[in-house]
Length: 351
Image (cartoon, rainbow, N blue to C red; front, side, top):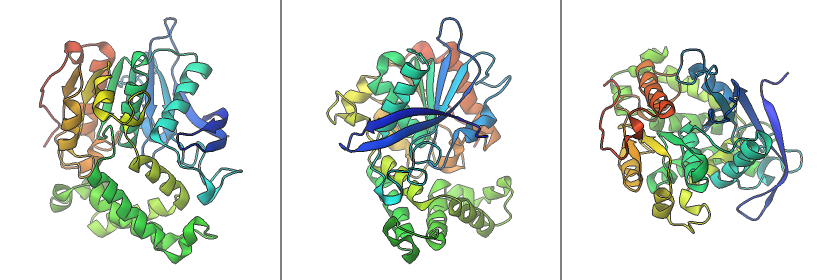
């Protein structure tokens, strides 16, 4: 039996003008909606993430406690559980259409409102690509979002981020076995190369110089890289490229009615917000996060000071960083501290 629920969207129109046939969202819930229907928390998945990868920070006594909150974890299109190139009957492989962040969020909005009957979210939260979706939620559906927590993820895909993604895409597609997406066997060499290049960006110079990979159980850089290879070789290549394309074109300015105006979209956000970049993130950079933060009306700047790069924000991966993130979740859900309005707060995690 599957460990998730399915919501059928049917023929779902996309921002590109194409239609995603038999569109389906895979999701999981924890806890119960209260009588006031105001305790819902929406968690959004990231690149190669699923609902399962959030479970380690959901539980009794945690900031996300099912005894107090109704927690909805939605899988993004392309991750192999929601509609994806690997599981589509009508549009498999490279025939799968381009799906935007906005398309994901519109589908999630339909799930939350039409299917679950919720018109107010206490918190929308996500790491990495999950943060990109959370930003879009807060701009496109501002009245619904009480609090926003984007962790190591920006409101748009900035130029360096786009170049990073173009690089890993190119090495995967260079494998002759890829065959323009019509592969008969997995392009394992391309997937391995993809993973090795990605690993250099996901962490940071400090992580490798100080041998921080040992905290993850690896005795050498090569051991870490081999683990990344195995992990990515287990993924469908077209699924990875589908999510990558979604990531590359992300921009909350594209949400109606902003007509491409990122600044206006950021200024329309009314949610109480804590912005949490990591100071050593190489592609969702702290500098660009600060550029976005300046347009917010009610927000705190709370960077994660960490030697773990982008992965500092990964739920449950590093204890100190996770505790720092959970404290922000507690504050946003309780209304304490973070509700005081715009702040230049500069505290961070353990160095």
